[in-house]
Image (cartoon, rainbow, N blue to C red; front, side, top):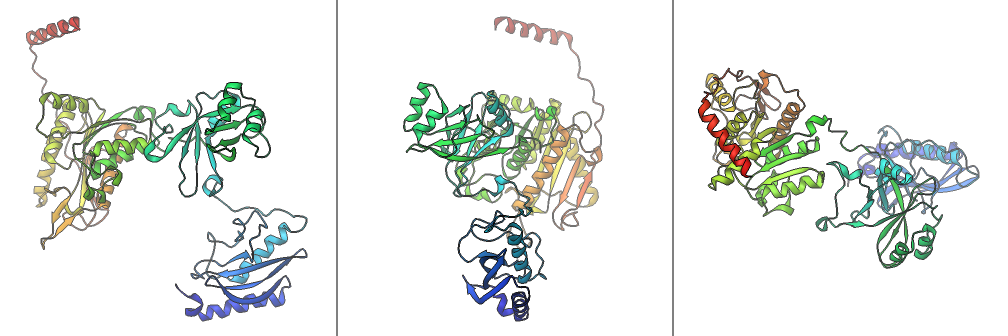
Length: 559
């Protein structure tokens, strides 16, 4: 503990004098005593407003004066809506506007002003204005029993136009038991609500809508069902020991009752949410429809995938044969729930928890493994059919191969790599109509390194690791991996949006420390590897082409 009153006795004396001055000269406060309450220094007394007594404590927390003092009733009492439950009053001086030069006496005056204005124990006065900037959803807590519903769904329910209404109930966490209501329209996009999932204790509840007015108070199950006016078949079902949600939309407000397995019903509070899913990504419809292949689902690739998904790119092909191990958790987007599983399948599960309607294809194989040529061919074909290809393997051989596949299929290609020791990263771009193929770009990069008199940094034989001069492992941390992934995602999004970086920034060298050619964190080297050269047209052999076309037609006829 800090013990502010012991280490700053001058401030203690100032506080004592200021509060006692209020008590002797201003007439509305009587000081009963100074004491300690729950280990905190405080003044106990009575505020008098409109002839009514309000027994209070002025409490000085241990971190005073960096944090404000507060006023609370001596016993639990609900005096005003500007109060946290039956405890602390929400005053003009509070954590968001507190200054250390203010005193406990100022807090007392604020409490008096509130009680004088509102006269809660009298006839009731003018309500004090609120300075709260958080919404009702953000401030709900235990006992709110929230039912969340989108504004559009709320309107459709009220008009009787909502189809296939469902409710999802999450098991209790943080003493909250939320229920989410959605309809077919809500479930039409990639950002639709999820379904039931035993692994996260999320279950579906049947929903029944009554267009009658809701009862004003909680009633027994049978009476509630009778008031709802449901057909006999539904009423009989709901009278059983089942869990369901009944929505009454006949009044001005939507009212929800939760029928519990062991009886009920229990009235819940409804929170209407704005329909703003997807608006933060800023993607055009054309960009959102693009499919992106990410080869490498490690520390960088997993984060690139998540950033792209959260930014509106919901069609992803993930390629990696590796298994998530405990040592991967230091830098990976996944956690212990996926240890022992293939990274791509764990990553797919995570992405679908973010956007349940996303189109995620998982290929659990490495492209450089010894395997069937047929399997290899169709996997590479799937990659080549994507609208953009990302190499996040940190392996130069795989990057060169993917660069060639991208060039052959006329696809934009982005290779991302974290340098050994976390000194920086590389994001290399090859656009088919503008930049040289990746192999030529890498050759230009290596030539530039020769001109600078430095060896090109590498990701290391043990990925993202190197040995320091004293022989100890020098490891790239999660910050290096995350920053590089974010830069790569930004480059990819700009390409998909049709506004790629200029040609002189096709290769970005990102510095995170004072090493190699970097001056320090934030030093970016923009490198041009030249423009695409005019390539020779492929030779034309009409006889060979006609031969193949004939065979292709025969195959079509047989199919």
